[in-house]
Length: 372
Image (cartoon, rainbow, N blue to C red):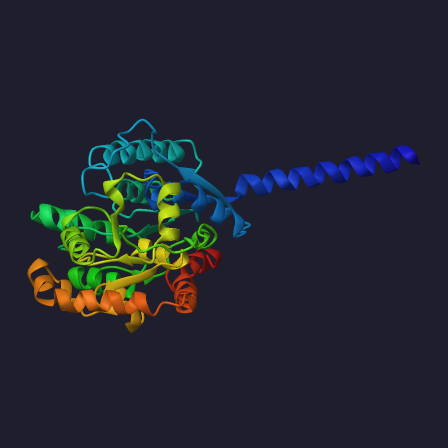
């Protein structure tokens, strides 16, 4: 009798293991095609946090995997840019080689999702080519940050040839879900390409982890410029304000090449983060400022218009360019003093909560994947 019981138990265990193996074999994949990590930017955080977040969300029928490029690409970004113009193509080309091998090895399955954390990736075209010719239907998601369709972006300023707009439209038509973090960005994209040509959706960026990264410290009289030093960020306005308001310490973060920890510490001690940007599709650093207890002061334009209440905004015409800044300099200086003079901290916490819920939470993206 004992022997029969043992055989039955062994049979049940083997059957359970067999089912687990079968389920694993047939488990679909979420392939995250990442963007090369720059330690001083959010891409360094996304390298680890985004895959971990997707796994913790509990997409039970999906195996979350990352397709990354080589680590031996240039670490320094092209001056003023978001990435290195040479290194990013090495990285993306290596990703394409990996994707091709996944198809050849039978790793890509019908119903898989490919999430591109940067939609400006040529391998999207090649991915669709393989998916359709090999008859393996998949879903492609692309997170758009910027492109030639934005006249103030590097691609918009430096490349005037028609090929780039045609290529971006091809990317958008190839992608099943074109994701944008703000309505302003989505609207600009659609107006450039036509409303019927692309499938566009809005979601907050998957940055829920940011809420745990800041602990406001005792505030010092510091006003921070947390943006890249690039024409579209208008750092010259900030530098001129520094001369006019000597009672405050004005700091341009990129002047000091701060590490992420140093940047966080400085942000937590600052009273204000300032923007005069003429190109901004989301504005992560201003949200980080709110989390750190630093007041964001932003122009009433771009994504800022929908994200911030009037108390954090100044009229757009005050900083549309350097000449308009000079015309409105006294008004801008008075606004800075006014905002800093009445800060009690409570409205910053409310702002951070609202921004986190509406713009730094990937809920719509998660819902689409979960319902497939």
